[in-house]
Length: 125
Image (cartoon, rainbow, N blue to C red; front, top):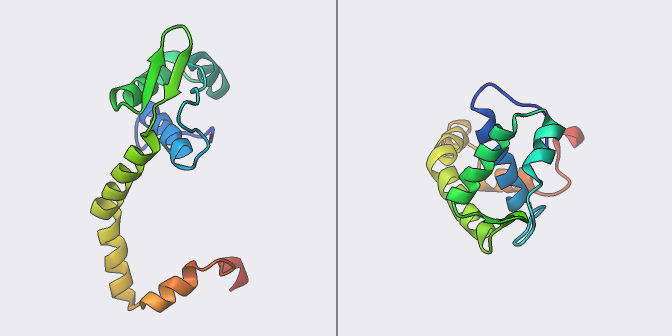
């Protein structure tokens, strides 16, 4: 996880987003334990209450479960739930802006697919 925090939103939310990204990217899978609150707090120089608040949000969302005396673990189906929520969020919040930019620039589907194809990076242009 990145060690830098920004001022755009509370740190606990940023930490929650980082854990969500790890789940979506397959770094954390169903049944995997979350790093302990104490370890995350020490490693990232955060107040343990901040880490606990981020983790508790994941519990509230039923993405993570607490096993008394053992820690917190990724729930079965968490990735699918997150994928659906992130897709809906993207389509509602980001896609309208992206689509407007595509239309404004007159980009064709072919140009977009070519730009997105493997091996076609800005460094090569």
